[in-house]
Image (tube, rainbow, N blue to C red; front, side):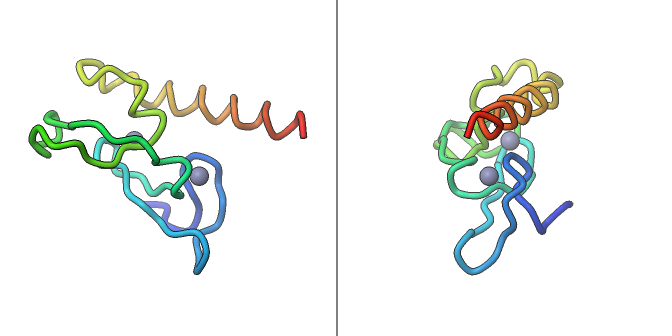
Length: 85
Ligand SMILES: [Zn+2]
Ligand SMILES: [Zn+2]
């Protein structure tokens, strides 16, 4: 588990950036990259909404294999946004 940087935007965790774990994929994310909540019954979290990363929030639960692709696409999207700044 890569615990030093956000798996989404690669920001370094520390005092100001708290790590949150996506309940669907299990990776560590900063607050803004894991601000979505939805039930994750496929990971045995039951029917209550739990914290998930942006990529997992966009992926239908019946296609867990697609989460990696979604994460990659999301990273590319973030990179494109950063390049605009
Ligand atoms: Zn992040
Ligand atoms: Zn996730």
